[in-house]
Length: 136
Image (cartoon, rainbow, N blue to C red):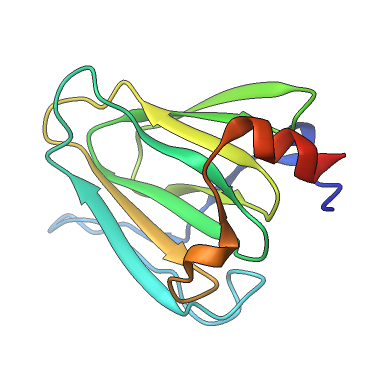
């Protein structure tokens, strides 16, 4: 069981280099508390659809809205917290054991995910009732 709770989850500022030609943000070794093992991104999410609806037993993930915006609903089994991601220089670090749902995607939004582990189906909890049992 993981004791992580949503009250401790906050947005992290990603270093930004400003330039009249365009800004640059960098996530490099040492920024996250883990080595990135997998990178994927969500895009073309139809209006009204949602993504996520799962928790990880071992993986942590860092989410960034590269374009547009979306809402992340975090749930630790007792408390919920909603965070809107809408800036490419701010990201959300989600620790293990937290249920997440992504919704309210704006048109053209892109969600980049930097994960601490490779895809492993056994790491996912995809049923909310099973998640609640896992948290107890």
